[in-house]
Length: 265
Image 1 (cartoon, helix red, strand yellow):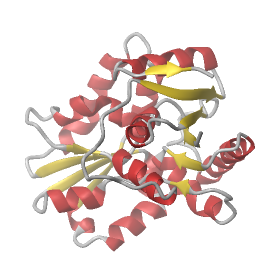
Image 2 (cartoon, one colour):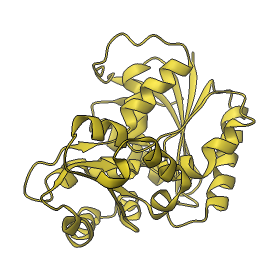
Image 3 (spheres, one colour):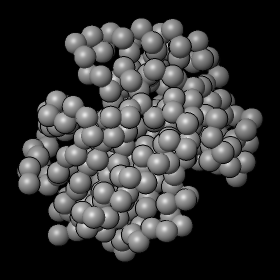
């Protein structure tokens, strides 16, 4: 059975795992959440690179066929140096800016991301490669948002709603034609961000693109452009570096909301 490693600072990368399950429902997934050091968005690039390399080594010892960095911050800080010595394909994630610019050729694109992603060289390189991106894309750093989602505390939804009203709503001006979620944690609140301004703003993320790139790197044919349905069951091992039992329970609940029963190994 093919073994795929999926890495994030916490539970955000489960949204990427969902996308990968659509294309590789029979693979065995190892999900590594570095909850001991979460959130990554306010850490230094050197720290994030070090922790991501630790996770990569863990995946290699576990015998994976590929590693998915389901974290925009980790991708920004670590994907390039890890690829220089990697023994298996390493797939990073990046904001779906290119797709947003293509689908919505007029108006502004609002990118929500962590502070490190917004300030990182990888985002600057991406914007430089895309026509009109620098003029049309407005990047908004959202410090503290991923932490609120990660906590899954009794009042996390209320905290997130208040945060969105205070921090994000003022940026949702009338000329914003689409939102791009530049952190996998934000994918869990996409319905809220889409309706924040009192109108339906299309919301895009990079998860489907990551899953399709994973298939390409593993030479797995992609039958169609349409997104496959989710499987009813999935083979997943969870590894969290802190609060493991609680995080595994949360992970199972989040995936169960999408009709997925986890086969624990």
